[in-house]
Length: 151
Figure 1 (cartoon, rainbow, N blue to C red):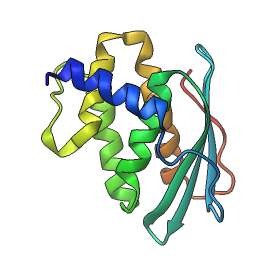
Figure 2: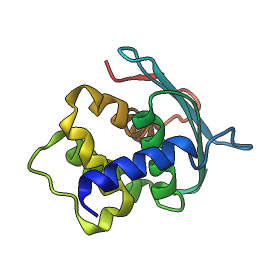
Figure 3: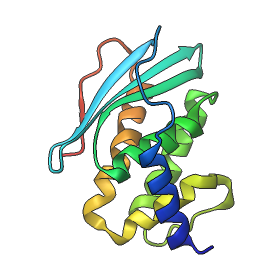
């Protein structure tokens, strides 16, 4: 299976049946994100246990790429520390925006997101959840985070 097939299959699967979709009881942080150009909107719910992401879920609506990226992200960050999740954000951001960035095996299914680079207008769709996550994890006051926008 080539990367294009993987991209299509993973995006379709995670859009049809998004993982970790819905509210999160006892969340410690809830951050809203939006992409005003295409209308993607999401709320990211995190429950932190010390420095570790104990649980994560998302709600909202968006295009297939936005929904699939959020679903993939929640699977990838659950159980990681803040530092690990932020490092993963950097790797995925490079994968989405740097044509020279090759998907490495350590990314697993997230490597499929490299296919978004072929559609520059969709990069913001795929990166919305990731920027929302980074804002939440970098915030010193998790209960007072302003909404994140890709614009």
